[in-house]
Length: 197
Length: 197
Image 1 (cartoon, rainbow over the protein chains, first blue to last red):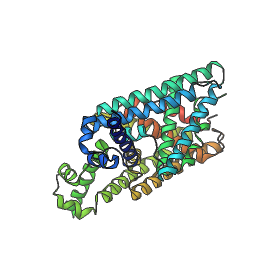
Image 2: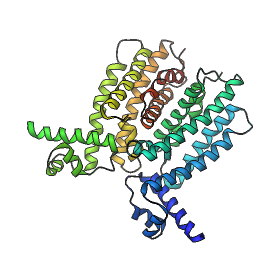
Image 3: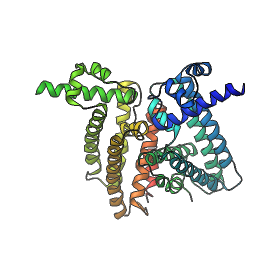
Image 4: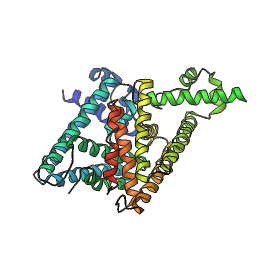
């Protein structure tokens, strides 16, 4: 079992790196197996298809990110400080990624949204669930800040969507310009979008 | 000459539709020529490579969009009204696209940014120029509104970047959810980002 699950994790790790580098469409199963150092037969033992693989990559990445977001946004500090920390950790993660591979890889979910959403219903549905969950988490913090009188918004849902859209848009531009400093104004923009008092 | 340039325009039209539907990586030259109804030999008469084709598609799309943006943003109305019209026309264009092909196709430049920017330096450089030009155009209007005392921002460049990022982020989510109503809050979000008084 140990070796079997090693092979699965190697495939997932290689697939995630390759998808971040070059997108999903350009990849073939043979290339993923070569990068993972596992025989091609192993792939179909674990995954029915390339689509099943990308769904697993998405699920694992979201499990990690959801854990991080819950830790940061659910903490004890005041709600705006928690939201700020989310942006700081996002910037730090993109910077670490850039130092590791030379380029800003951006947001895996955003990348797949623009590459795949009109092609693969299963991936689209999963990405919708993830962005809904992100908006839920941000909305809870905005609502808390609103109750304390720290912000003033007419619609906490729309405000949370605007914050997530701003994050995705700025991460996209950070990727295009390969420049994580593009993310520094995120916090000020977020404060404006949620009507910080 | 008439027939020659017809073939080129057919290839460009087919390529643009196919790229909007399924992205760039998934496409082959043979498929583009089949959709365009031209023999494969024509392709290499007009384009050195698939990359040369995508650069021409990007340039033509930007020439059209730049013309529209200049018309709207350079108009005589007060600056905030012009900016508002830009968002309304963007929403209308996405709605028309959805009615035409069943799905929201999003922003061609954003789509290619997330699909290609880490792979093709020529495309990345072109997309950087386009987003710089978009930010220039928005910044000019924000600066004009600032001079009139209609908005209050500390950095017109950063404010314009935030507006373009918000537009890209919301268009991405409109594409993911195949729902152009996602674009309706754009104007309110823009006002917040540029500190409308």
